[in-house]
Length: 488
Image (cartoon, rainbow, N blue to C red; front, side, top):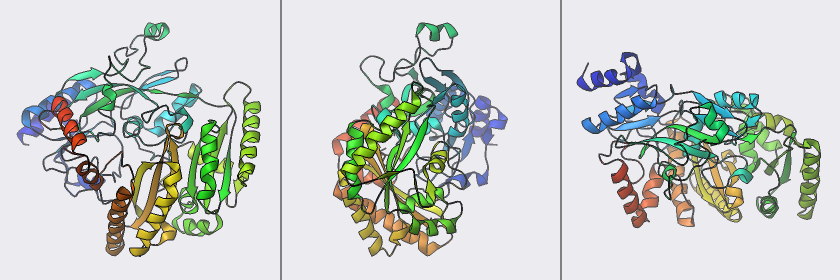
């Protein structure tokens, strides 16, 4: 046992320090973002005090730390070490749901809480949370929100951090802060009755500290607690499809829905991506693509708890009228997929295997922010790049998610890859790099720059990089938090 391992054991206990050569298997390269460097140790703290002690120890010993809270596979590279000797701080053991408050529509949770754990507990209280499309069953809710993964309901997104509120943050220098109204941690029941609850995200004062850790890939500090805004679980809901042969045919229609805040779940998807979601077996995905519409707007309607049936009926009538204005039709089911069946899938995490990996076992994913009207141009660029790389265009899944009440949208391409085939893996990585550069030159905004995207983004914006490095020096002077990511 070396000195560092002994010191870590003093902090978290002997059973919570791991020195296992197989530990790196969860960091295996599923995508081009991931390096092959393995962490030296993994530690599992049980509370914020131990997290703070670990960060202080890392500053004294100049040991890199990598925060981790979701289960594997980790294929975006943000939790993959880029330097040797790193210690992974596994927060999955901090999995308490601290409070669910129906009156304030708020849940307080630790980073180890997954969607699988949280959703049933919220439903018991008549609440729900806006979540991304079919997250992994072991995906940390807090990590998903911090990394700004797009949620299915754009009308509830007042900013890109929705529905995140107050945070408890241990900065890279070991200091601890509560952002927003997090200083009112609701530790006493009377606090909740008096309204002293962590319902506000920005602050304290004029500085929005919670933005410093958003999409920071663990480079600024470790979030150990958060409050998250919820919505009332609706008593009535339906899901519909609006089919089209071309993406251009549904753009203006979708803009109209966003303008009037109609619908709840709202996204656009191509037949390939929809096939990956609803298929149970790899061979089914290929067969389904031929029967599903080339493009579909997927639209959920909810009724809340006040006159739920009447509200759903009114929305259904209004949206049908709008669809007809654009020569489209809203239907409750399409061939091989009903709205009821798809809704059941969307209301819970993905079944195993994870839907993006279901077809070939591995996948590259390219995603960025843009505006809805520019998405057809990016789809054409993707098809052109795939054709030149001899990658089958029919295997490319496209998912378009309006965000921030429709101000912009998340455009994502899913590229399945057979990891057991070196030739196919190499082909997928080549297409990933080529398409990423084409998108960037076309104006794509990589707001969550993993791997090679970080170099593309920050080499074009020296002033932003300089400011970020200054902020990094303030909160993490010794650069112990996930070094090598972003522009650090």
